[in-house]
Figure: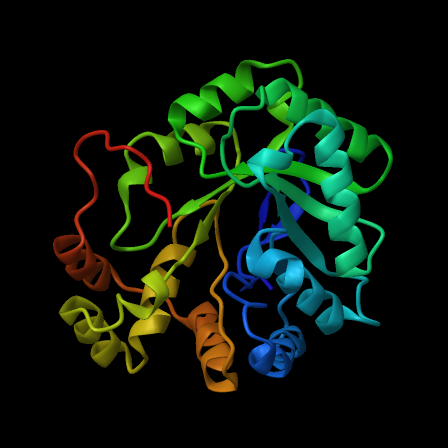
Length: 277
């Protein structure tokens, strides 16, 4: 599995398995666990989840999927902003560890900016690192001003990633947020990389997919995978979709392909507010 580098120099896979909206229906649980297991069988080592997803049920599903195969995996989870005080962050992490049935989380993120002072959350992250309960920490849904504030705090340069909404249709982050992260060697983790499937009927994607002999989902994912320092975490619950997503790792888009996509989905020419889903 290809990797990019964390600010510490350690590797992180550029492709992983998302779990947003998993754990919301007991009837789907078996299929969701099976999809994650298939992804692991195909070579994925990164799984992204959060205490918010399914009110903790997604972490339980991940725990089922990784049972007996924790070594070599890179687990990502997130703490809600209402749990982001020094004390509550530690408690939230303990709950996530219990649901995941593991002794450590590889990357623990603040899910979005709340009212708790960032320094308090950062202090909790440092404590959790010191205790061996998390290996790295980062943030999610932080815009440029949030990142600048974070990086100015004592210890803020320990931020390992920023997970944001990023796909061909949602390129606002490219104006100043992505350049800031790249300048600090902070990978950007792209969630909703195919816009929950809404991108897949776009004419430009169909044109490139036909020329490449591939699918529109693979084109959309390959475009993101081609962006330096970008980690892509598509969610899939059907075996065919899991396998299809992996096909993007073998797809290289040509300059002509990229021009077609840029014309259909132009990069931003000015600053816009960060988007969230």
